[in-house]
Length: 185
Image (cartoon, rainbow, N blue to C red):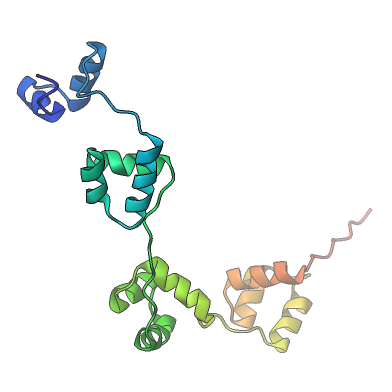
């Protein structure tokens, strides 16, 4: 019965899991059919047909299942040829217009490309998001340097008008240190 019927059907009929049916079949020494070893000639034909995307033809000519063809191709490292579709001027224009305000996934769905293709094109075109932060002025930096030795980041942030996180990041970037308190003896 095991050779002619799928393990899933047996599992449904017996109330067992598919894994349990397959395990029992292995323990009993049952096999669906003997696996034929691959010859060098078959591998060469597979390389030729699979790379061109002719998986069904390879399965028919080699008397193997499509799954067997895919598995063997994976084992010997064959990949289908993929010729990327060139980007049109309209697509690039749309990408440039969408880029500052949209996520890669949103741009991909609007353009009709994969997220990885859009991400790669953004990189190739050198598109950058506009920084969402304010540049520190010389006046703010001087005030930070003057106040830091004696004030907390919280106090400096409220005085400068920046977030505590921004103040702390700038302190780290500038390498500022607190003055050590002198102890009385």
